[in-house]
Length: 116
Image 1 (cartoon, rainbow, N blue to C red):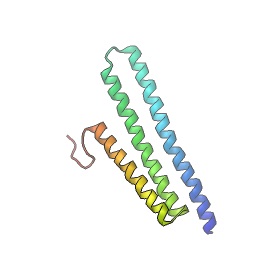
Image 2 (spheres, rainbow, N blue to C red):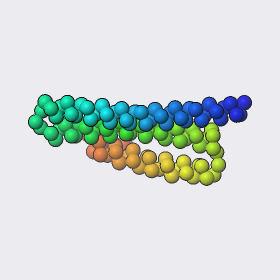
Image 3 (cartoon, rainbow, N blue to C red):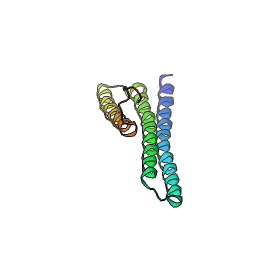
């Protein structure tokens, strides 16, 4: 049964990682298409680029959440060693830092600060 659980975990990790990559890619393509459509119709470019950055940043944040989830599942269910836990900790720290900095970039505040 342990081998069956490991196989399910490995497939889950692959699916969740693929979903994270697909989310980032589709949101980026969608945002770019929307920006290009607006650029053809409008002359003011700054709001269009701001909206493009907001959409792409949001897609990256969502995709990162899925990638972190896949890393956690892989480490806990497939490859539980001190080394893999250390690597997971570093990866989660880096991705969390990226998430926080993207959040600040998109909203102008830290996630724990009250909305203005």
